[in-house]
Image: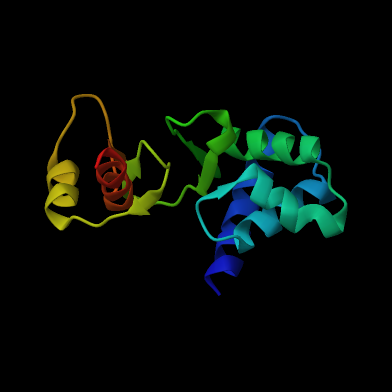
Length: 154
């Protein structure tokens, strides 16, 4: 049910953006958007390509659609220190605050919840700025990588 609502609201936003920018609607873009809504978030372009394979949609078309969705503020790219190959995307929703820990060794990303930090950030006021959501990434080394490093040093 959540995927259906996400698809409808994203399609409305996409239609509005395309009208404002005098772009023609496209059946393929709608198909890519529908497939993206069905994916677990965050997702990579490669994962989206895999689910779009049976529709025979090229990777170039998928990247063009992703860029359009980002411009229309339907998706946002998550920045990673591991380079472009690890680029991930997630849907922009009204209250999509995100906190995660990122291992600099293996690249594992784990979502975390910290009510105290969330409350602190949401209570913070910035002059001439109305915050809509936030994304916080904390970088370090995961337990598995630390354990592996200790074993290799012994």
